Image (cartoon, rainbow, N blue to C red; front, side):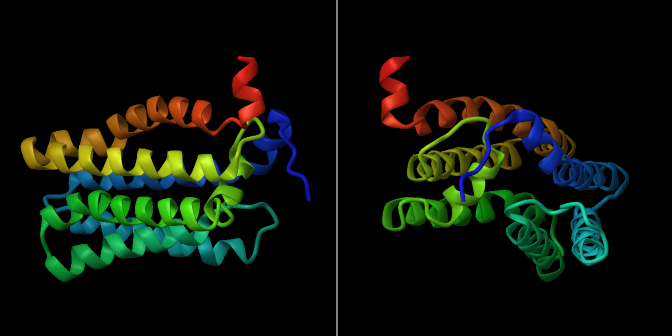
Length: 194
């Protein structure tokens, strides 16, 4: 089955899941801004993610997207760390630990499976045809850079500044790195002509 790369069709197919992602991020930021501890926003966001999974069974639009299970597992792992350690540091480090673990899984998929799992699923969101192996390897690099940056911000800045970084700054870094990933993931025949 060939995926379409028409931006209008992709937007129609993915807009609901993107809105859910943005909503969950906003929920984390808002509850984190009003809470003394980061365990509360982690648990609230995980519960909201589970509610979306349940709601998906009753609606026809795709609320969860191509990597939905992965996102819900990440939210649950974050809440699990928060509850297990009852420590803001554990919540802050969730992005570092999970980001590094996911990046290593993607790297393994890219090296050993030529992007057959993650790469193929991510292609659903891409505006142009890309090589799934290179896309997966590029995303692995993006994940490792993001994990290291989160660790540095969490280690050296206050909880409030980390909350702003994780809600907004991380998005900017991800966008900048995605530009590189998209260029890297273009099939060889496309990169030679540009």
